[in-house]
Length: 61
Image (spheres, rainbow, N blue to C red):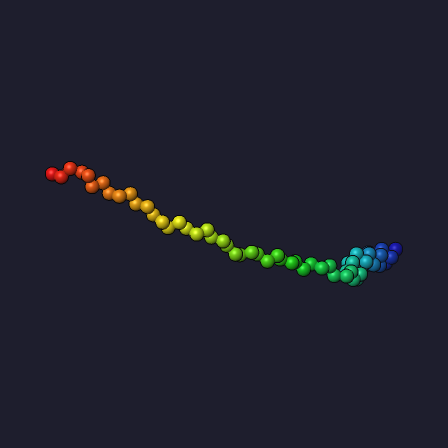
């Protein structure tokens, strides 16, 4: 009876560890990355500066 249980335990171990025997088709795990739009539109900077005229009407000393 001990031999029967020993053989049964060994057989169960082989069956339990043999799950990879059934080859399944490989799943498609490729990842497609969308291209990144790196174009940047910069608004033109207004570089015109208007300076107020100096006040030259101060009294002279």
